[in-house]
Image (cartoon, rainbow, N blue to C red; front, side, top):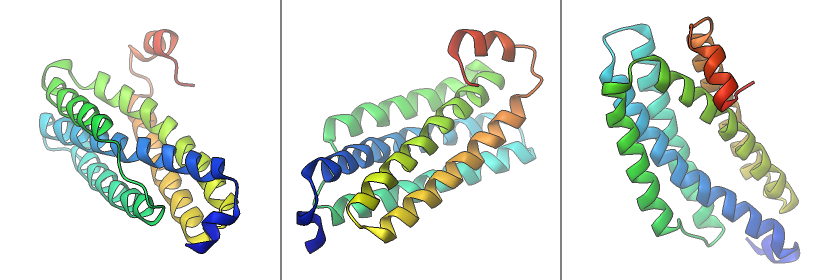
Amino acid sequence: MEYLHKVPRCAKENLIRILQNAYSGEVAAAYAYRGHWKSLRESPEKEKIKQIEAEEWDHRRRVGEWLEKLGAKPRPLREKVFWTIGRTVGLSCYVSGWFMPMYFAGRLESKNSVEYEDAAVFAKELEMHDCVDDLLEMARVELEHEIFFRETVAGHRLLPAMKRVFGWS
C-alpha cells in the first residue's frame, strides 16, 4: 500500500470513483438479471442469465475488495439508488417481454467493459498490477456478457428501431 502515496492523487481518486460506480452498478445489474431469468421459461438463455447474475455478484465482491485496499468505501446514496434500480428493472421483466431486457442488458454490458478497462489504466498508473489484471479479467467477462446479449437479440424485428432511438453499435 505504500506505493499509493507516490503517485498523483488524481489517479487514485479516479480509480476509486470508477470502482465506487462499478460496485453500485453491479448490485443493480445482479438484481435486474435475477428478475430477468426468473421471468423466463426454462431455456439455455435462462441458465446463461443465471450464470451472468452470479458473475455480477462476483465482480461486486472483487470491486469491494479493491475499494477496501484503496481505503475507500461505497457511496451509500448511490448504493440505495442502484439497489432500487436493479430491483425495479428486475420486476419490470415480468411485464416488458423478452426483447427489452435483453437489449438493454447488452447495451449496459458494453459500457461496463469499457469502465473496467478505464479503471485498469488508473490502477496501472498506481502500479497496482494485481488490480490491473483483475480489472481486465472483469472487463473480458463483461464483454462476453455483451456478446451473449447481442447475439440473442440479433435479427429481432425491434432491433433496428431500438438502435436508432437508444444506440448500441
